[in-house]
Amino acid sequence: MLFLCSSCKKEQLNTSSGISFSTDTLTFDTLFSTLGSTTRFFTIRNTLKQPIKISNIRLAGGTASAYRINVDGDSGVAFKDIEIPAKDSLYVFVEVTINPSAASLPFIVEDSIQFVTNGHLQQVQLNSFGQNAHFYDADSIENNTVWNDDLPYVILNYLQIKQGASLTINKNCKVYFGAGAAMLVEGQLNVLGTDTSNMVTFRGVRLDKDVADRPYDDFPGQYAGLFFLRGSTGNLEYLNMRNSTYGINVGNIKTSDNPAVNLAALQAMSISNAPQVTIKNSKIYNNAFYGLFGFLGKIYAENTLVYNCGKNVINLSDGGEYEFLNCTFYARSSVYISHSKEPLFYFNDYFKINDNAYLYADAASAYFENCIVYGTLEEEIVKDDLPANPLNIDLKFDHCVVKTKPPIDASIFINYKIEDPQLIDVYKNNFNLKNTSPCRNYSTTTFPAFDINGFARSGAATDCGAYLFR
Image 1: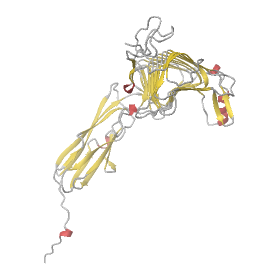
Image 2: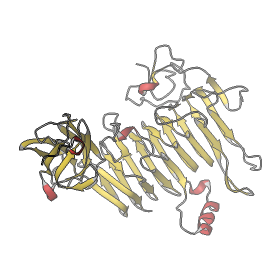
Image 3: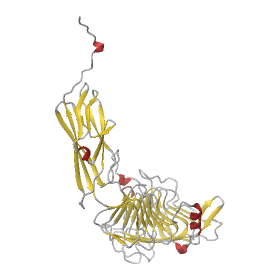
């Protein structure tokens, strides 16, 4: 007896070759040894009108591979009889961790994922470039130390320069910070780049891209920043620092888990124990909160460019003593930074402990000479002088191109222009001057001998800002 029942007929399964891949090579950007990558992926597509079975998927390097794979939600190095419905696809996710080697230059790490479908062998190539580095993880420098440009330097968690010790970072050194990492200076930090082609770089550790193919190097807030604690000193020349949260922070106390100890440290702050930091010919940008943050500190900066920070490009809190000569400060919104509320520059002379208690600065002065202080808000310069503090903030702009609104305080703005500085292309981060810029031949008689690019300044007056018109 023969029974025919079409509703009970099993769906035909095709086991011939009929799969395609979204890429034939999955490439990871350069990764530091021992640090894992972001996750990348590709898809396997069934091009047929009926289900297809992949009899075997395996990571060629097996358990010894630097790579890790996940197929359709399952992790492993080998998978059998993976079925894909008609005209459907599945995801393969890949990560990699590079093992250290003796190489100083980037080296390639290869593997492949192999697929067998009804005897047909196909593969997707996996390529990564590894980079060895000097690693510092929750570490400290307790003696005078020099870093040279032999390998990159990677800081995880924090690196602390102890009181009485110094760290000198020579030209071309690249310093990479892990998520949330900080450099804490209690002693002395010397950054000795020599020109814009031989700068010292501070940046986030990720050299690759995220799953949306965006470079991590574009993301602000990747690490905490550079912190000069009370009594420390810094000499920063030709530093390129980007993508931190707090930028260069000058004046913080060394905190503890005891609130009473922290309060006592705050109350002991004065201009006499302020950290002293000199910054020359440097670029600081794309930070989540601040470019420069002073906390009853001392900063002298010249020929320095600071731009595009999420809160303030310059925040000077609880007073301090500051001088800026031929610097360019600029603020606008970008893909990752919103400049819609907080001004470029903010200065106060107090620290609020709670609603009823304040600490008053014993010094509060800032002098801008031959500087560009400009942004997209109507008011980019805010002075917050607390009436209860008998000390008045001494703030002056002399031969500066600024963005502020009336009324103009003549005691603050000595000689100024409220005009567009006419920079070549701020959207491409080109802060050189146009031929028609009001910054040209506009300065006091005091200015650096060279601009940030090393071009000589001469004559009775020079151009305002860090860049000389060329």
